[in-house]
Length: 276
Image (cartoon, rainbow, N blue to C red; front, side):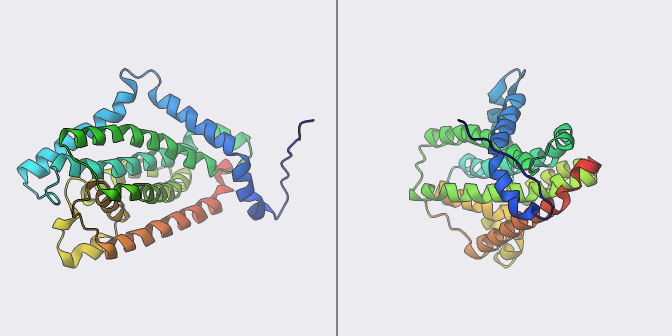
């Protein structure tokens, strides 16, 4: 006989059983992620190519503006388009995940008000859609490396670690904005501004090495500086130096953002069904 599973909701045991419930509802996580992926590319004219066109055009514009017109230096004679695209990958993943997470609870309001499940499943599943775009966009980087005969060093083996850091930054920030967006709907207008501003204050179109040494640590208060520098360190190799004090600071900030994001989301979660 097949075993039956029962969900028991007992007063005072929410905290102890919450993470167990998150694991029990993993199939809902898969379903929501797959649904969002299908919706993203359904009835689009060129489909998956959108995930290639947007980062490619961004790379072209940044290469012309920063590499040609501003004549900013690259790192260790790395081709400027490769330098830029090594930063576009983590930044676009973070920016897309931030937007998807912030709107995820509002988009699933009917589900939240009718069925019990750990609400944490919704925003975290939204990050998977952005990660799929990240993987697709990675093909452009491979193409650029082939075009410039650029061969990465052994450091490329460390790339999964920096991907995890980008995941942590995206999920932590996304949980904050998802919870705030439910209570204060004005945040749907704030998120695009944050993304646009972050693009220019992060070292996407230029190397963070051009920042004066006395300002490097302060500049690293932007957590994405450490993430982007980590990606470049892993992908570019060839003498690329990682500013370890700044990267360590960014890593600590990402950890704090993730922890505080989960705590704040959990604290506000019980009110979602009432105010959404």
